[in-house]
View 1 (cartoon, rainbow, N blue to C red):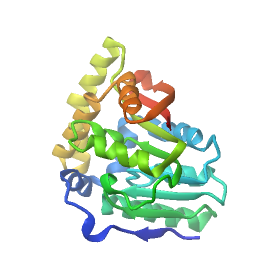
View 2 (tube, helix red, strand yellow):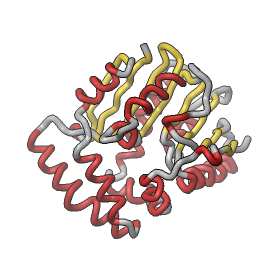
View 3 (cartoon, one colour):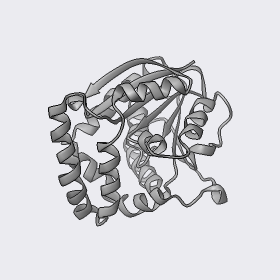
Length: 250
């Protein structure tokens, strides 16, 4: 089985974030692994296990990037599952497709449909997916984003009633002491080393700033509740610097 490739063509808009990801896609995975001390792999494994708990048949990996989460799902899932990776960056998707091709040559895994497009206008029918996962991408959709309500509405539209939304994201720690050290790390270390490795300091300044200033787990839960979801579980990771939330569409 091979990956399915599709795109939104002329409907894709030119977002500033697209320029960032087009510049850093080659080093994106390496920088993530370095700056999470390799823990991002473990966190995705936990998120994938949560996503598969209820036995969904149709899963959307939103803001799939280079495909690490949807590939983790493919490793764990049964063959009759349908997986879709969706992202606005063609360069990031190309990396995901290459990963899929390499892995599928070594072992048989479910087909992944990689689709390019805008989260605010997804090409999927209402109530299509049993589960939606989004790992380190939702802050780009809702934090200081004028289209936040539109993005959340589209996520709700394509998720079936009772379906699960699994979110793995940066979080503002509750502990003031850990928050202080976390802020120093994100403000003084990550952007400059990330910029040095990737060659784009501006991109990592944005990524570090959005992580540092992002919502706490409780605040994110409130945003989801107001958007029509019911939060069923929340787990702080890495001393609260990362959150793993599970919510159901009401």
